[in-house]
Length: 222
Image (cartoon, rainbow, N blue to C red; front, side, top):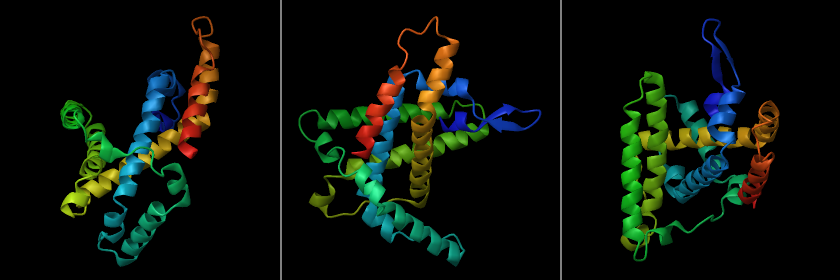
């Protein structure tokens, strides 16, 4: 979604803009992908709130004292944002996911699938695409690391420890997901109407995406 929102439409003229066809074809025409996007957004938000204590106390050293103070202030604003607390109180109890008879098996399955995704990123031909893709995949891995550690912290008394590059990747991923979710909510219904008008003869369920978006957004703000 965020790639389609700022797309190189004409390389010869360096013209950038929104690629509506790409938005519709890759995301908006697939309600399950829209739901997955909202769930991933909540998943990363939950990871962020779970790591509040660490992120608040972490050192943000860029070599520029003024920028460091600004970064710390922005991180605290994000962590204690009323909108964040409202959108992501406790969407699910992640500690219970890894408990019970199927917990360890589920954990291994997720880790295996994540390693497969990471390996696929090495096959991307474009260097910039591979770089940004790996950064976002690392952000997702960081979110998994945080939520995998939930439940063990009380037993071991250890706080989640993150590396500098993991914090960068997590915040970058959250930014991309935020942009994408906002575009889906703001533009999704209009793009759907426009595209379905063009393919009216082959579209059998107009308005389906709009209902999914309304349901997903209402869940997000509750």
